[in-house]
Length: 297
Image 1 (spheres, helix red, strand yellow):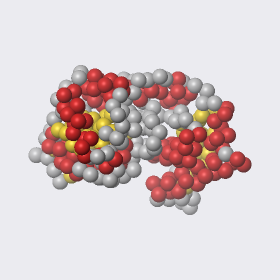
Image 2 (cartoon, helix red, strand yellow):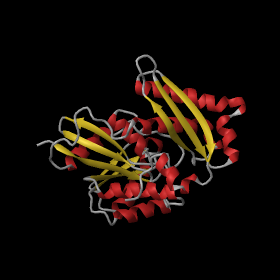
Image 3 (cartoon, rainbow, N blue to C red):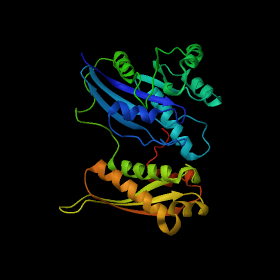
């Protein structure tokens, strides 16, 4: 019998979960940035192997929530710990562990799902530093496997994938062979635009920005997609940062996002962007619904 089941990636913000998902699945399903809490919802990616099918679940980084948005994000991650066949805790070995890591390990103690420890970003540290980290986690939780990896350059990722299949139950495929993800196109539109906002505004704009897809018009016989989006910021002082002098920044964001969207859809894209100030949108349930954040179960 072939193997089939769910594997979730959990970890602290910026541990490299989304980079690993994209590398394993072979598609860019999750946006990546160096800002914390880039991934805000559960993202599913499916990969078929000769030995079976693995459904990967990328989750938001686990942290102590400070807004309704963070509550939803963390609840999504915690749900993914319980509702899968195998957990993969991804740890960034290039940074010192802190209270957040202890908090996450405490949450794992109540979870019966078998867990693999993936020590990520080993390309950034000396090998001698890895053994004490490995020894620390060995005493913290009964992980079934320990794998040093680099999601960025692919080190040991194939080893990790073989272990996923080893620990999954036998069963028929859960999705058709050509199925890649459960996220709709509107989700990827908002994420691709948000990725460019994060990348191009650098440290000038905090991560508390969101993108709402107001209109999504599929192509007719001649023209391509027409997409209308609003970039939400929390304060009046942030709006000119996104717009830029004489509209230079929003034009730059729009051009970069449109090019990425045209690669995604393999079609021409018309992209219209606007910026709107919505104070405290991270605590606004309706706004969170609009940007597609899952509600706590």
